[in-house]
Image 1 (tube, helix red, strand yellow):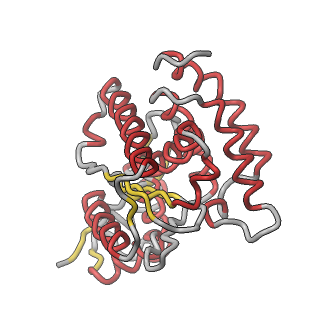
Image 2 (image 1 turned 90 degrees about the horizontal axis):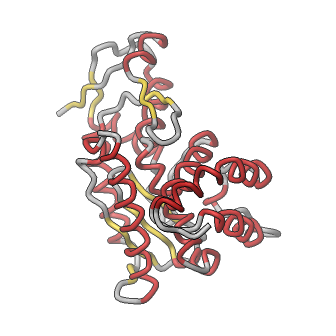
Length: 268
């Protein structure tokens, strides 16, 4: 079995036919990979990761992960429905799991497969802080950052050499694993700084739509920076914007976020 991908039609034409616009941030990105294939592979890798991890269930923290995640999920669904793009989320099969690990980490794979590590909970402190993290990670999935990174890897590796051609299972798996190196407990997703900045902005809006106070984003990221001070930077922050840029961008996006928060019943 082989997977067919749209490649090799030239940079200008490629960007024209395969440009996807984020409905929340307005950012456009190249996404030429097959989403169905990405979701299938993501579900498999998520299941494998969970099988190798200690999953926390039934505790107050585990219930908080599910509760906060579900509220953000519902807020996203309402927004996408309001703009006539419910179909974008039609194939999502959401899962929210708490993994026992000292890593200051959380992630969301395409299709809504979310994992939060216990190590980051002392930094989140409360539901608002947790919503910052989960809104950010869910935004990576909703914005199609996985498809974007895979598309970039496909173009970099194959360029225009396979116009109308096919990629074998092994080639596809190799590209996927470069973007989602799930083989270790860390389970890091390799995104670029532009994508991390977009996830900050989109996540801020989503948490606000879900009724969480976006003003808590700055204290959270300050705590994250303090938690990594004097030690090896957590991988969670490795490709993120520098702290000054992040705080500046959050402040720019707060007025709009507060509008969403107020509309969701939040007190300004």
